[in-house]
Image (cartoon, rainbow, N blue to C red; front, side, top):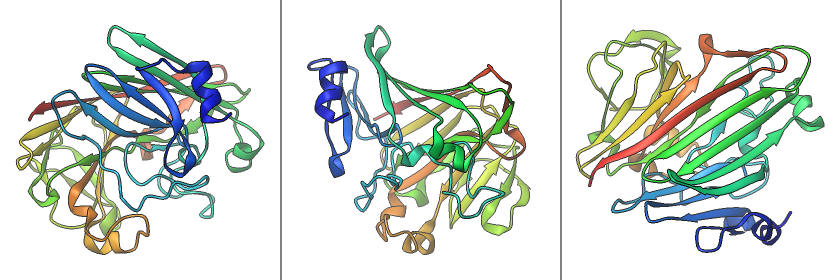
Length: 299
């Protein structure tokens, strides 16, 4: 369907309007007294969320690719049904296939807590070629004073399957060198920059170089503290047992064609997830819901 056709069927005039966005990809623009947001059907990806009285919460690279088959660099990509490289197929797309695939709209509704956008994708011949399971995946996004993200997996096949998942949130910050992350003190983590060596977080996390940490067995909320913008960005998790913290730093950014050389300074990824030993098993006919709620405190 074209953006015009989507809008005719699901748009709410003045509240949720679907039009062609970057790269002519269909985009849902949500406007409420509480917040504005932009959501692309490509990857079911949120690329902007601005609560009333606040500035942009999410980072989006100025060099991001807006093409079918490519991930959008920034916002909140969905990593699914594996994280990083696929263990048994290094040629498979990194972080799974749903973030580079067009989804469909199930519904858009105005509710007391905000505008609820429900987007879905299901298994097909192309997905089975990469991951031989039948599934139906729903991303339910509630745009309001908080940003609520729910990822709902239904196993539509006859066999159980296991999956990894992450809501790969790129937060906009003034200067990543001055930011700290609380909520992980005392948690064991694997340092992927240094061969997945295991450590225990001592106090708040501050980034001084390339960082790719997977924090294990933690369901706690995490807070990004930005002293320059004088605000905190809070992520509360549901049915999530791992948290990822990532920034490529200068050297890593230079190897990414869709990230400006200095843009790494303006972003930090802190992600609700279920990866590694916290993979999720979904039985035939079963359902699994994983969620994150984002809030902003301060200026």
